[in-house]
Amino acid sequence: MSAVMKQSLQTKLSLHIALVALLTVALIGVLSNVFVKRRFESYIVQRQQQKIADLLSRVEQQYDPAARMWDTGFLHAIGMYALRDGYIVKVYDRRGAMLWDAEDCDMASCAQIVGEISQKMRAREPLAGGSFTARDFPLTSEGETVGKISVSHFTPYFLSDGDILFMDALNSLFIGCGLLSLALAVALGRLLARSVSFPIRKAAGVAKRMSEGDYAVRMEGGSDIRELDELTLSVNRLAQALGRQETLRRQLTADIAHELRTPLTTVGTHIEAMTEGLWEPTRERLSSCREEIERIGGLVSDMEGLARAESGSLKLERDFVSLRELAEKTFRGFEAQILEKHLTVSAEGDCRARVDRKRMQQVLANLLSNAVKYTPPGGVVRVVLSETDDAVLLAVEDDGIGISPEDLPFIFERFYRADKSRSRASGGSGIGLAVVRSIVTAHGGKVTAEPLPEGGSRFQVALSKKET
Ligand code: ADP
Image (cartoon, rainbow, N blue to C red; front, side, top):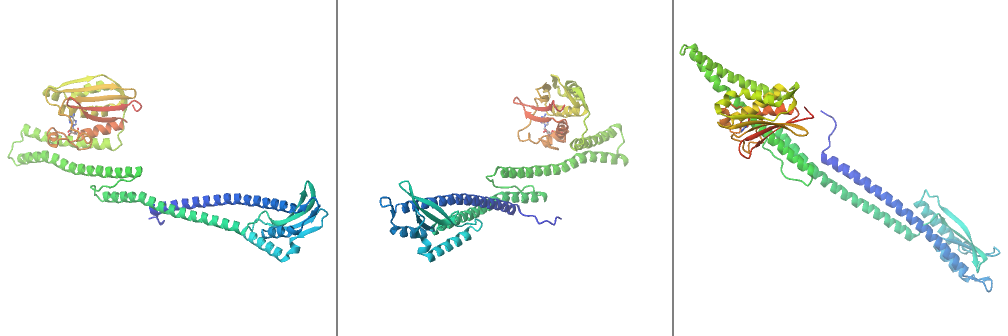
């Protein structure tokens, strides 16, 4: 026994579906997070550039070109406002003299803002390696450089509290959606796994019961999965076929017992009477015993023939054979019955095929024997030979009793007899057509039976030209 613990189909399917869902959610989460983050970063960088441009223009507005002087009154307000936003501003006049310096004004606030922003950004983006850097921009008025401004801020970018809140909310949304989709995928996966594994488990249960000999068991219920419906159908067909085989096997035992009992009893009583001196061992009595023994021999050789034909070890010795010649030769074997029943027989058309002569003659003999047997006196039996592009066709037709539609699907099965009492009375054992099918199949061909509209039946052997 294998030491490996086997998983159930449902567990395996559920695990795989959950794994795929997890990977998909993680991938989508990471990709969209990276994408959104990139876009957001470039938006922040743009916004910061815009802020610096606004700052510049507001500072430039404090220059009075007429007086060629700076109005430093508002510079403080602009600088302090910028400081709160994280920009440390220094303004110089055209000669480079300091007009306003945020650090001079409020050293403590500057240090606090630098510390807070650096700490916050390094905690959020430890790998970005950002730092406070200062950049100088010229201040112009009416096309003339009137001073210089130095703006120091955390580069490449920094996030305000609002930005951080927005990013955190976005991240929570991603994680929430991811978890929700994962939970949904796992739940749906489990449902799907269950709907797939349930009928398979049921099929396994039915197969087990069949292996225990219960062929009446059937799988019920359809599903919305085509393959599972096919499985249900196949399992039910298998049960039906096994049941039929079982019935045939039982019937076979009963048939063999019955077929053997009658001649054995006759022979037994005859010989007993003769050995005890009650009966003279006359020629007639001895030949009647021989006939009975021959009947037993015939049955046994029928069964042997079938066993050989069905064993798959049937070796064909193929030759190019005229099927018409073969049919006429076979007809001669039935001359006595044909004459006795005043049957009209004929062979029409001709074609040649590469077949095992003896086996094909056996096929013809079995088909003709049935046609002769099941056609009332005065009837017609015909062998019709024809060919199509890819097959050689051999048909045996009669205008006899015909085959009922209920029996049609089964007549090629071993020991199947449409009308049990009548076939037995006519010497049939239900083996002939099974032998025909085995031999034709060994030739790579197909045999079919159909009732004729005007009464009687038609058996057709189709031999593929590729095979022959
Ligand atoms: P059997 O030895 O009983 O004839 P077969 O296997 O040859 O066995 O045939 C199976 C059954 O098929 C027969 O019992 C008979 O009912 C039916 N059958 C076969 N050939 C014909 C036919 N030409 N006309 C009517 N019924 C036929």
